[in-house]
Image 1: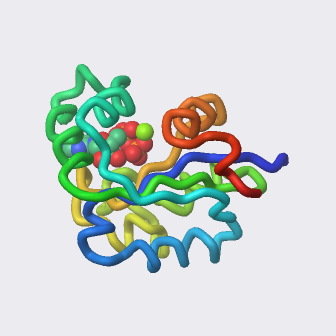
Image 2 (image 1 turned 90 degrees about the vertical axis):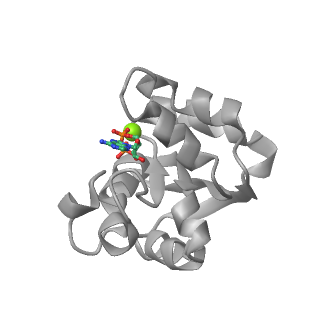
Length: 140
Ligand code: ADP
Ligand code: MG
């Protein structure tokens, strides 16, 4: 296993309920290090581009609307096997199917408003990190 970086978003349902600290606690307890973090409002163009792989899915419009509905916290997480580790810590997309102790089981409201995003591959992690961070702002 190697040290990896993955990209994370605390979604608007998390910031709206003041859950950024509670979610970060789960991330840090899992051994992932938050090496960059910024609170932003995603523009419509940013959200559309970020989720363009889902452009043909029926929930795309709703997803873009949700991601731009309030502040989000974008993060870079670092650790051993960080991409797969964070997917495990997040839990299943649908909170009803998320394992006990995962972020989505603890906090998510629905399959759409599911508290966190995490990259699904090392390749996508690099692409997503570049969309929101300069290398100089990532402090490992
Ligand atoms: P994940 O975030 O677990 O990688 P996907 O890549 O399949 O999940 O979907 C991206 C995001 O789109 C989800 O996190 C969720 O916010 C939203 N989404 C996925 N499926 C649905 C659905 N059936 N209805 C509404 N929103 C959805
Ligand atoms: Mg995904």
